Structure formats: C-alpha cells, structure tokens
Image (cartoon, rainbow over all chains, first blue to last red; front, side, top):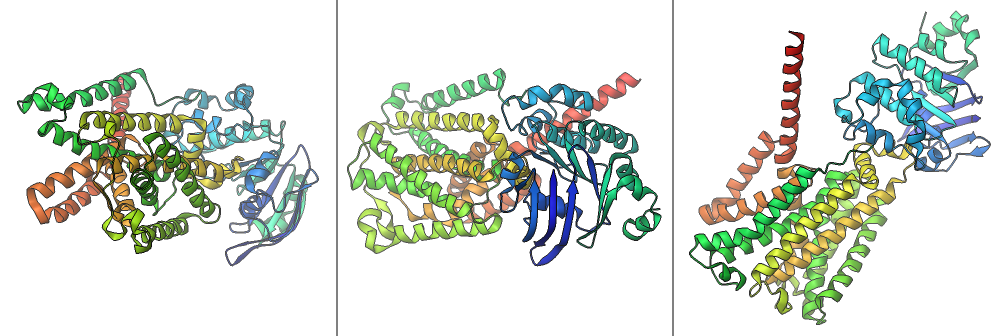
Length: 231
Length: 348
C-alpha cells in the first residue's frame, strides 16, 4: 500500500534522512523502530509532505506523493497522529473531532466507533483541550484520525509519557482500528511495538537498516541490542 | 455537536448594552442641564463632546477587532495592518473630495480596494511565514505610507500635511448630525462584533484557530491553510477599511500617521490590553486605550505619554492575558475551586 524508496530529507542544512526505504502492506501494522534522533518522525513527516524529501520516491496505492502538498496528501486518505498529543488545545473535544471531518457527516458515521474505543471522550465532549489530561489528549489525537475515512494512519509515539493503564487502553484502540485501516507506527517502547505490529522497519542514523516480520525480530537479540538498545 | 459561545443571556446582555449606549448621550444631556432634544439637534455641550469621544472609541474598536481576527484568532503577525485602515481613510477622502462620489459608490469601491490590498498581502502570505511575513507586510505598509506623503500626489492625499477639506454628505456630517453618526458607529461596532463572533464559531473560524495553534497539524488534517488565512485577511481588510471610512467622515484631517507602524502598534496595544483573540477584548482595549490617552493628556499634559507607558507595563504585568483573557482564566480557576470544594464535601 505504501512504498518508500530511498528518500533523502533535509531540515534546513541538516541531512536527516540519508536513504530510507520501507514497505507497508495493506491491512497491517508496521512499526518504525530506532533510537532517539534516528529519523523516525522525519520519515512520517516526509511521507506526509511536512518535510518533503529532496530525492527518492513515495508511492501510496500506486500514486506518487512526491511534490504534493501536505493537505493534498492527507486528502488522499492518509491520517496523521503527531507525537506529543498534538490536539488543538483552544478547541473543545467536539470541535477537535469536528475539524477532522473531510466530508460532511464523517463524524456522525464514526461517532459510535470512536466512543466505543474511547468512552471517556463522550463524557468530556464539551471540555476544552487545555483541560484534558495527557492520556485523554492522546485518546483525542487518535480519535481525530479516525473521523475521516483514512486508508493509512501514521501514528507517532502513541504511548509516550502515558501511564501503563492508559497505554493498555491505547493499544486496544490501535489494534481495533487496524481492522479498519493500515497503520505505520513509530514506537519507542519496544514491548508495545512487538505486541502491536506484524512488521517492522529499523531506522538508524537516517537510514533504514533492517526490516521484516516482528515475530522474527523478537528472537533476534543481536539486532535488538545493536539498533534499539533494548534487552 | 459544536457548542457555540453564544447564549441567550449573552444576546440579552449585548442588547441591554446597546440600549444603554444609545441612551447614554440623553442621560449626559440631562445631567448637563440640557434637554434630550439637544442631543438630536447636535447642540454643543458635554453630550455632544462625549459622543465625539465615543465615536473615536468605536472606530478604534472596529480597527482593533480586525487586527484581533488576523493576529489573535488566526495567528498572523502583520506589521502592516495600519495600511488596511489607511486605504479606507484615504480612499473615502479622495472619493468625497476629488471625485465627488456619494456614500454608496464610495463604500462599494472601498470594498473593492480592501479586497485588492488583502490579495496583495495574500501574495506574500503564500510565500513567507512568521516574522518574515511581519517584515514584508511592514514593507508594503511603508511603501503606502511613503506614497501618501509624496508631493507628486499631494493634490489627492495632501502629502505630509494630510488630507484636509473633505466635504462629507450632510446626512452623516458628524458636526450637524452627531447623534445619527454616533448611532451608525455604535451599530457598526456591534454589527462587526457579532459578525466576527459568528465567524470564529463557524467551521472556517475554527480552522483559523487551529492554524494559530499549529498550522502543521491543520495541514496534516487536509486543510489548505493558505485559503483560510486569506479569508481572515479579506474580512479584516474590509473591516479595517470601513473603520477608515468612519474615521474620515468623523475627523477633519486624515493624517499620514494612520498608515504608520505606530498605528499598527496601537492596534496591537488595544488587543493586548483587552485580551488577544477574545474579540470583546479588542473593543474594551480600544475604549481603555482612547479614554486613557485623552484623559491623561487632559490632566497631566506632556507627562501623559510617560504615564501611559507605565500603565501599559502595569497592565501587561498584572493582566498578562489582557482584561478579558485574564478574567476568563480567573473564571476557570474559580470553577476549579468550586469543583474541588464540591468534591471535598462529597467525600466527607
């Protein structure tokens, strides 16, 4: 479904991605793994055109995303859940969901699904984003990506800074939504990543260095130590 | 699902305020020993003077509202906002004085001019962001400021002396029809406030707020943010140009200062005093700004500027979110305290 071929991305003068390639099969969760600063978030932003690659190719359902603007890429059916619980804090929960509509009636059609996954949001519907806890903000950020009909969701660090009980809830939600859409997930928490994803891609110093089935990676302690520093 | 910031009590409160403001000149006339008819007859006295001062407040309020939409709601830092006002002021003067146009045609042409200048800013908007946008808009406004002061155009603009001798149609002549013009300016202020409130509560307005918070996120949701910013600029440009129209009708001289950076800073001060992005704060800020300026100058003469500076520093220090903004936040705190008290009671 998504094919990234040897992309190079600069932020200012800095060469951040120096050759990232990856494949995301339809209907799966693929985890993008790597140490801090490896280039995982920049890879997601490059796919979405927020930091456009200077070379290489990105294909989504056979269509090239190169040269397209972010809003155009998003409207092709790619949702994005940025890191740091990126909700609009001055808008209410309802407005945060409403603003994510791509077609009139999107929210009405997805309301049941969203509130089944995140029942807390229903209770907080008129509360301003500023007044939500970290976990509630992350739920809202994921829920917002569910409003339009996305074929692919790019999710950045969904478990970052969350309490274990909230991480569990988030994992259930991501698993549930993978039944509806394909997911490319950046996850620093290796245990969470192994429980969610079927495939993985490791990025190290701006390059994709290894990919395959997550089940195989779990047994490969040498790779885990070398690139992820996890035991 | 979206909850509007409007409520019945808000609407009734606004209506009551409007009626009080209409009745105010009559009350002042009675205090001053004049008959209410003196207000309608534009007779000299405190009532006429206060109406004149309040008309200035209303004009500044409309201008400040337009800047609040651009900066406070949409997050566009423009240092050239004074140009929006000045184009309206000068265009009105030239249309009345040199072209002999009536109010209707002048206003239609004014809207066209406002659209053109917003599109001019829009060309910049598509290419630059943040402080670069601020500096380029400052450059555009500076060019306009230089043009209106150029001797080559003095026949039309009055060069550095300013545009003088504008003959205003009798029915809105602020000398003989002070109360009528007072009501027009008052209704315009309320009208623009309600329009802006509606705009901010609309889906388009909510996207503008989202752009202010984080444009990247709005782009990632599939919004072409350029068009939303352009809509905000267009609305602000037309509004500020209309404030400029009222200014020219009310003032005997249109000074080139209305196109200067100082006049943009005045708009910034007004919304800072009232509360950035609150809309009602822009109106309150304009009132505080103009009334402080007038009364401090009257009471303290040349020391007024120094005192104004001190007061502004104090306001920013003690009310960092402006009068309305800080009041909203304090309100939330009070709600928080109430909730904690209730929770404590229920646990006991």
